[in-house]
Length: 126
Image 1 (cartoon, rainbow, N blue to C red):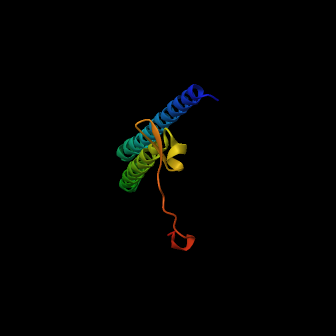
Image 2 (cartoon, helix red, strand yellow):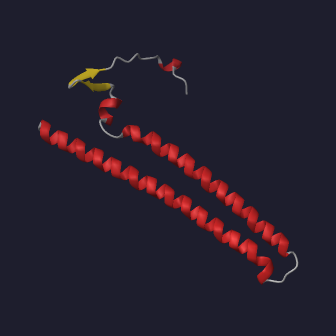
């Protein structure tokens, strides 16, 4: 494989990775919107249960539905930000990930090998 083909392959790989990240971001947003939509259904159910059904303890069911809303919203918000942080951390793997893995960088068009200090296995924290 010549240098031009390698460069084209790397550009295609970067584009594919960026598009995959965009799909992941949109999926995360869609999941949050699903949590929000479900919470709104429970709000509507909680506000109308007492008026539509004349049952004893209607206020209990109304409170139950509204507490479910708060739990669903909390879970949805936490899930959204945890996944968003994970997605942001995965952006560092786009590009010359093999070079970064092996400790190589390109400075002014010249390949530079980073010096790494190796620690004995017993000194590595787990």
